[in-house]
Image 1 (cartoon, rainbow, N blue to C red):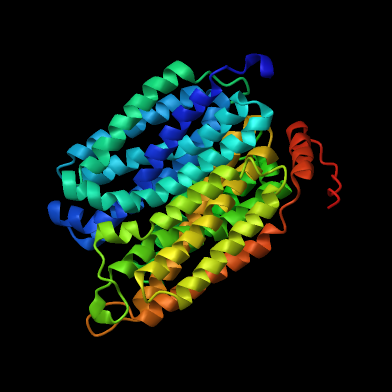
Image 2: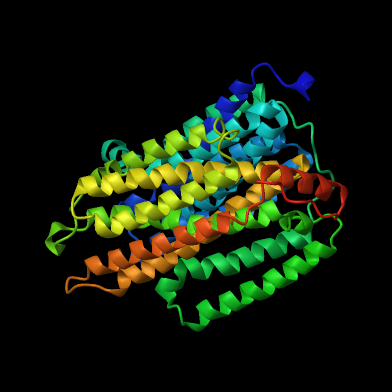
Length: 480
């Protein structure tokens, strides 16, 4: 492999890093400014939330499907297709005269979710083996930081330029990235072959929609409403059918044998719990800081000020995310995952007891970032190293999806808690937020416990090799 590695692989990394940063910003840029968009497009609060929900559904479906497509047709080619879709979506959103067109634009943007697994796959193909862990960890850190950075940047951008520049700026960056990707990123040497299983793809899309839709809209519809319950039942049935179809297929969208690898299913279990805590914190910590001071606990912060209180989290997240790979020879990814989950749990507990002053929230968010950065990077590295090279895109795409599903679950649970106890003016009680922080700590503690189920890297690599050849022999656990 070393003979074909380009001398400018770090330039390849720079292109991938810019692509993932630009798209990850789109995850959170709109959350703080939904009221502004609602007012400008003359719509309702319920309707404007589809700007987020539509993106979530599209990204959830596209991420594993296009990750798998990249494994088959070439990751560079798939990346260029996805980047083109993001540019089209950004342009349409920036010009959208109505909410309906904006939602369509967000559906197109959601195809960019495949950038993440494609980036991991390209790194595995192009980088020297001893550099893969560091590069994967760094990309993971950029993804995590980008998701939080959107909350910080949204206020200043909207205040100075208007909300449509939340799309113009990513569009310009993505165009530049697309040109650089076409020039500097070589095509994949490792391909899965075959073609997309249409039935498997449709079933995957169907159960993701049936699951994520009620998770996103259940609070509005009512958790006990027939529509909500019916969609959950439908999702469960579709998952069962999908798994059966994938097991029987000679060309599955997601190889169930791969998903049963100990490294994959245990890391994805942690990812589910991890996503629940991460996305809920991104969504509700800014709301907490923006609560009026008249409640006795809020800071009355503006969108920009609430974003600045998250800066310590972004800084510490970047630091630990970027060092995850370099310290791997001394601190295993499994241990990093456990330490990161413990850090997130500690931060959630700090939120419970320290939230009366802005500096206390900033301090706790810094601790949260320490755990988030290293755990996020470790998860991605474990998946990339734990599967055969030709399945990197599908496996990492599904892992991203599972984090997204966890995020939808966590956000729904925390939303129900926060809105479950309101004062006379309709604002959440302090005790509601305190209970939510306790639940976030519970997610992190569960992730910490689940991290000990993850096998060692050496054992995981052996199992991945056997999965690639169809060997079902047991692999003994690594001592220590």
